Structures are given as structure tokens and as C-alpha cells.
Length: 457
Ligand code: SF4
Image (cartoon, rainbow, N blue to C red; front, top):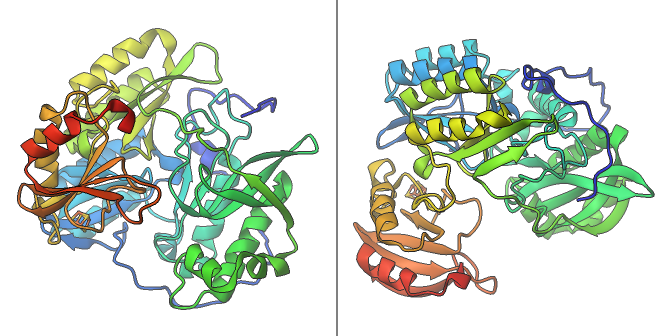
């Protein structure tokens, strides 16, 4: 990604605060009023029952969790729920095992500043950024100011509360560490036109595989996205909770034509997705960010307490959740990076790409979800010990495959306790890919996977 844009270097403190100072919005975009659609997705204000208790999902602006918020979240999860937390694949966090004290938990989270600006806006805070947004020396654009404006629009303007809880946006500033393969209803990436940076907009695809269809000058990006969202809401029927079915029904041209936005056809930043684990340089000389992962996306309140202390001591006082079910700790002096990685290892986080569980995914499975046919989390740990070398395997308790935002190279789909069908990703096949073998035990699955050439991953 070409660079050349000068941006302000953030100080050690206040990365969160830069996401919050919204400008006043006075957009005149036609958005119809309509009732909030029902949803089975958890939120902070809507706790969804699972086998192990309620799930309360907290949507973090830009994935950023301040140290004080992390401590408050850990204390609330420990006191009013089971103490088990999960990092989601949209850089959010959820509390599991919520019981009778759900109301107190919610109050504690709201007091920690983890709630929406407007009660009806909880569901629509789905805006993903790079965990390095604004601090990456390679970025073309600082996505944070526009992200803050968009979040304020989505949360504060009740007309947008009609968007589905799954409707999601992504802002990619051209950072080195970015998750570009998650499909989003609306995504924006830097686009250089006539020597000027624009935001290129893609719809119902991912930056890695989609096409930018509109170019917005930087100063018109907020109004442009608002117009796209307003058009979606004006046209969407009850079958169109997401952008893809609407575009399939009416066509891209019919959707965009009345908006009068500048049309382009430009491929997205394919293949620019970075690795997940490691040490990343920041724009500030001598300062780095350390990226780590929670084992199978799950962690405990005690770990979160310790992480809050760690980022206060070594970093800038904030944790950035990543879309790979992990976190990034920014603002670390380069000389301290090894020590921070060692402390993260001691806390039970993964910091090495070759760790057996680093490339594995598993949903809640039978221990937490009524649809689960097998205990996927426990099976993933067993399988990881049998695989050499480690493989990117997704263990799913049922065909919904909700732990993965896109198809994994290998999917083990549970069909009974300890038994899985193996699928190998194949772009020519719909769903999970090509069915390779049925009803494998973990041992049999490991033998089969170990026998595949590494190039298959
Ligand atoms: S993939 Fe199926 S079993 Fe696993 S958490 Fe989702 S719904 Fe439950």
C-alpha cells in the first residue's frame, strides 16, 4: 500500500480518546423510520441464553478497551457471571455464564463506559478497524476520525437503529496488520485518485476479494456512507437484513444510481492481511505493539485483570482487541517487547505463530451450546497435541460454523461426540468446502491432516 500521507503521531496516552471526540453531525440524509428488527445476537442490553448461562456481548469502539474498563469488566464478569470471557472475531468481547445478576452486570458495564450512547444503538455498533489503526507507520489513512463519526451516527441517530445486529462496516486504513477477508456489508479502503487519497467503498464483500464501486473524497466520506446506509434502509424488505440479498434482488446499478456518488471499479487491497502474532512497529520511533491470542478465543477474568495491569505498566493503558480472537498491546518501548511477550506467555496467551493452538478455532460446542454435537473446545485441545506441524483447523459443533467469519482451510464438523466430518476449503465448492472424510475420530483426523502436504494450508 503506498504511503506518503502525514498523520499525527499519537502520544502514549489517549489512543481511546481519539476515537471519542466526535464532530457535530448535521446530515440531511433520507432515512426512513422503522421498528428495530428482532435479533438472536447477544448485546450488552440483550443477554442471550446458552447452556452455560447468559451471554452478554460488549461492542468496543475500534476494538479498544481502556485499562480501567478492562479491570471493571473483569471484576463484573467475576462477580456477576462465571468469570469466563471470549474475544469475538469482530474484535469485541463477551461475558459468559450470566445468571440472576444480569441487571447488576449490565449496570457495572454501563458505568465503565462500555455501553452505547443511546440504548437503541447497542446492536448497530458494528464497525471494524485494524488493531493498529492510527499508529501504523504503513497506513495510508488514519481511519479513527471517520470511525468515530460513523459510530456517533449509528448510535446517535435512531433511524439507523433499524439496521440488523449483523449489519457490519469495516474501515481499512491500509495498515500492515489488517483483517481483510471478513465479509462486510460496507467497507472502505484507501484509494489514490489523481494524486489525492479517497475512501474507496465496497459493498457486500471483503476488501481482500471485493471491488471498490464508489470513491468518496475524504471530506465527504461520512455523508457518502450515510447516504449508502440510508438507501439500504429505504429499500430493504424483511428478507434483506444484509446488503448481499438486497443487491442480488435489485442490482448494484439500481442501488447506487440515485445517490450520485462517484463510481469506480477498483479491486480492493487483495492479500494485504497481516499476520496475527508478533511485534509490530508503530509510527512513533522506538515504540512497538505486541500482538497475542487467547487460546481458542476464551479467557478468564483473572487474566483480564493481569492484562489491564500489564498494559498500564508497559503500554499506553489500552488493549486493542483483534479480529483473530486476541489482543494487541500498543505503546511499548521496543526494548521491553521481549519482556511483554514473556509476561503474556506466563498469563496463558499465545505469542508464537507455531504454538499448537495458534491457528485453531473452535466454537462453544456442546459444553455451551444446545446445537453442539461435540465438545469442540476440549476436542481442539486434544487435536492440537496430535498435529505436527500445527494446522489451521476449525472445529464446529454444527453447520452454522459461527466461530469463523469465513471458511477455514480445514473444517471438522461435529456429527457426534468425538466424531467429525472433515472438509477442505475449495473455492469451487459452496459451504465449508470439499468433504474429505466422514465421522473421523480425533486420532483419525490428525493422521489424515498430518499426511497432507503443508502447501495444502
Ligand atoms: S457453530 Fe453451532 S454448536 Fe457451535 S456455537 Fe455456533 S450454533 Fe453452537
